[in-house]
Length: 115
Length: 116
Image (cartoon, rainbow over all chains, first blue to last red):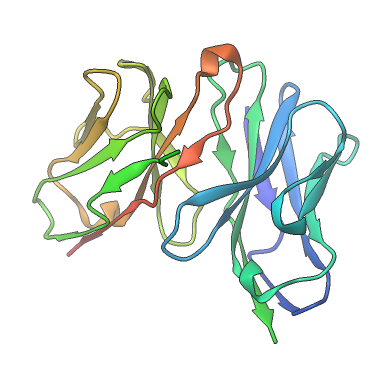
């Protein structure tokens, strides 16, 4: 069984300050992990993914995430927030042993960026 | 490359009515998914197709929901009859071919359904 817990439902940051979105996962096997972003009235967009290579993963728009197996975490960070980063972010897990790659989404973290 | 297309974008119906949503995946993508996203929650998988076969419909309320992908390309999701709790955004996604172990999914803009 697989599951994801996003530890913050809402995060508010000032423009230019760091962003940290926390995610813990549970997986019976080696997981694939993803972060997706959803802007209002737009489709979900993949930010980055971890499949089994480097534990520090770089994504689009300056985001990165670090896979920590000992802590079962996959936190998303960005050094400096931009107004365009205001959106909802989803942490997603998939068991790689499941050949059909079923995705399990977290409940989401709403990010607000203030000027 | 064109993305995943969905229509309509918005739909308002009364309870006990029927509704259908259409999805056209990215060209060449063998795997197609329908998700339900209730306000304030993450998307939940309803059904997953590999070409024109169903590989997972364990969370599809089969007494009222149905889906098909007859020619292995576009797909239709139907609700009949609708209930108030079906109000949600219905997302369609596609991926290249899960059987080759690549499961990055590309999402459409969704259809926002309101049941009154």
